Length: 150
Image 1 (cartoon, rainbow, N blue to C red):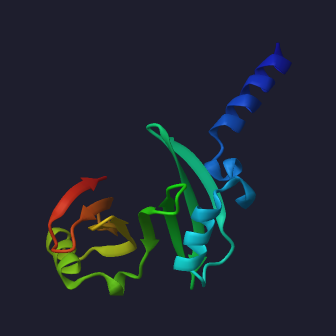
Image 2: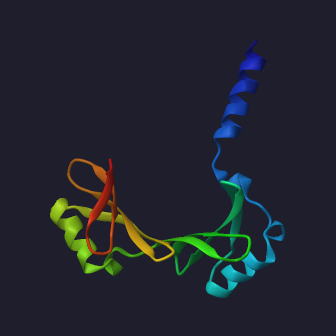
Image 3: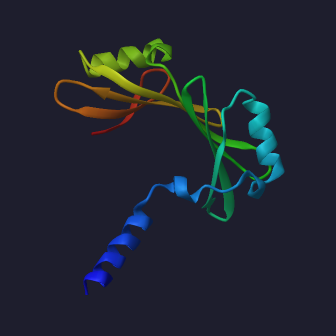
């Protein structure tokens, strides 16, 4: 019985592992998608590829670093970039975003920031910490707070 219990725990642990284990080789990614990413990001470090289904379409994800910042780019098989999520320095956030964060969370510390671009839509995800808690704030470039997660 103990052996069965250990096997079940092992299987559960494997299933719970991060998607990094589900990476796919670049050779499995359509050439148009690979070419698009390498053309748009010539300074990208090593690229990790993954894919997932969105409705009836397979979307590929390229994860890489440039100058120490993490990029996650979703791309269609034809090479069209669908979404860009890029880590940014807190100091490079638009002034309206910084001002809105500081107004809502006075004395807070910005821990991490990401710029998310989907087509023409740009948003920022900012992780802030105050004396009580940490918050993930989704915010528009004009400073309008769209959503807050604790």
